[in-house]
Length: 163
Image (cartoon, rainbow, N blue to C red; front, side, top):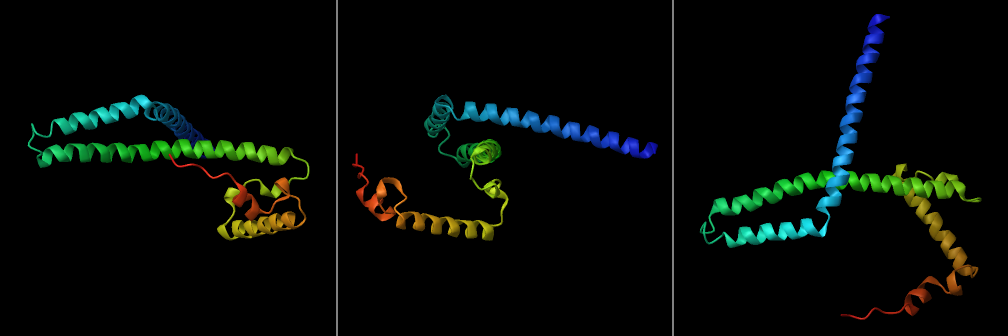
């Protein structure tokens, strides 16, 4: 009995540690993405590249000079992948939860559409085909925006002018 209690206590402590680390990374990733995604961060990155380029003649464009920028950009890219992925996962999860709430709240909406992201690819393909049939049926019945078929809507859409 005592051994089980000790094991549960250790599991709880390790879980607490994982939660603390996870929360710390979440906060770090969110703040980093806000700072590193700013115009100022982009300007600083451009400045670093310009300074590196200007120092080329002083270092005679040596292999070490080239290695500095290659190593630096590789490290930054590697770390940014994790930060970007974390913030995108959180944003996608929040968007899914909001859409799930809308589906749940709408009378007549199919609740089985909640959590579609967890379905297998084959199930998603089946659902996509169902919605394509629904769209075609709606077009045939005239139940669409402006009473136009999809092809007619794309042809009558205003064309963007080149700059």
